[in-house]
Amino acid sequence: MFRTPLLLLSLALSCTAAADTLRIPVGSQGAPAIAMPQNGQARAEVLERFGLADEEHAPVGNPPITRWDYREFSVYFERDRVISSVRHHRPAGGGNETR
Image 1: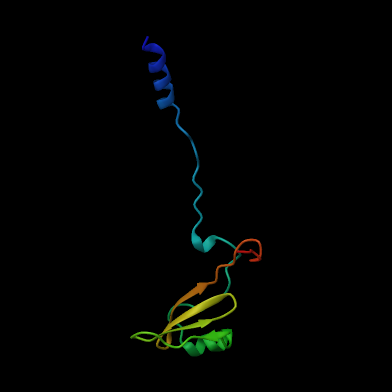
Image 2 (image 1 turned 90 degrees about the horizontal axis):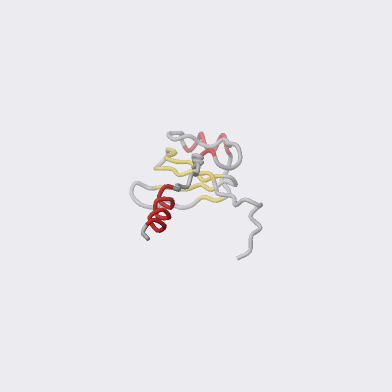
């Protein structure tokens, strides 16, 4: 009487799902790497190598943090030095998505 439910329960518990997890570091996703300013570079070096930014945002906070936006990336400065360069996200499929 208890054999069938016990057999089904033991079969259900012994069946495990097997799946592989594929991990891709964020910096490795998408298009190949593009040249961007490096941490510690002076504002003048960035201007010389990459030219004028498409948009420059006013300093915010203390110490003042400034952002320069280029077509492919943004550069963050603390006073006169680069503290980070961030590549812009481009949706797969060319970005022609409707909302």
